[in-house]
Length: 145
Image (cartoon, rainbow, N blue to C red):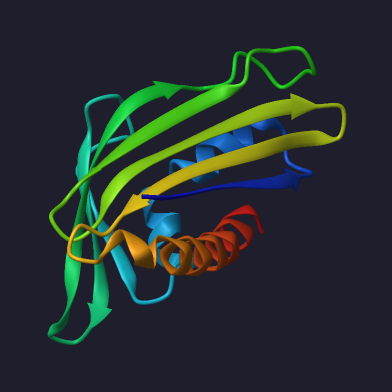
């Protein structure tokens, strides 16, 4: 398993940042070669699929929202928003957990990711972690623009 944590600062209030991070269509626009298919509004128990690929070549990354709690407010000291997603597919497994914490100047996002690629040897975990960290950092930056 490869694990990493990303931290990003946003000038947007926590509620707005949280809403943008759970806008699955925004993920499709921010992550190259990936389209999220979903039904309904983001909520605990929701399942969706991220299709990554080009043309006929690609794979489906199935996921389920395990925790979903918007921030309790935008003022510093309010409870942070929290989302946890389980990756339930056969190609990519793991968990994604992010918090959105209100600050005086906007909000802070902490993104924790665990990635497992079951068909790769564990020896490849450092490479998976590096590639994952770079890809998710770029995606998170695009989401927060």
